[in-house]
Image 1 (cartoon, one colour):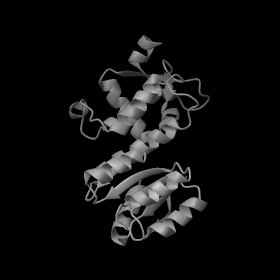
Image 2 (cartoon, one colour):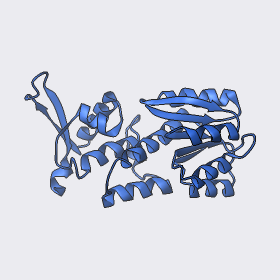
Image 3 (cartoon, helix red, strand yellow):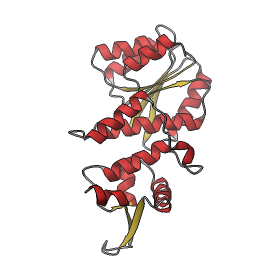
Image 4 (cartoon, helix red, strand yellow):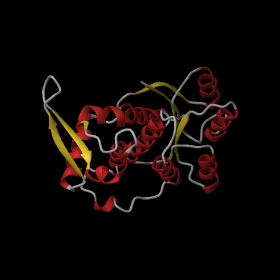
Length: 233
């Protein structure tokens, strides 16, 4: 489970953040704090992977809390969820290596996008080395550049999720290989239902193909690959 901590002094907002966060598969909110010092003490003693952090909290600002963690070598991933939207706070947060910055009020869809960024960054941490494509993807997320193709996508298809799946299929480990829905779901940290829907979309766009593998020893398995993967191999 992905251990997550929320730091938010407004308990109604904290409850909403927790509800949103718990919709992410594999994520567990282990603690909620209303002030900075209690949160800091807890984070120094416990291995936590994700921090959902407000800027305006008692004792110290969320940015001061994150700065203190960084001074001690704590590389916890952080998503800022706050009403603070002045340039100085945003710039400081970016320099502290945050995953995303959400300005209240925000939609669940925007929260979900932030979680997808976190999951993708988390998957990159498991790599021993990065390809140029990996580095480009990380830089893309850090600069939060808009995708020019989003407007062309069907309703319900999100560019961030699409990129996660295609990046997996285009990676050095799996390029020009067929992967099952189970394999893709495991590698991308997405549900099998989501993977199947996005692969069907890619097939409709003539960007992917599928085949049936009858040699699984059980029920036949549908496997997928990108069409351009063979061109690049």
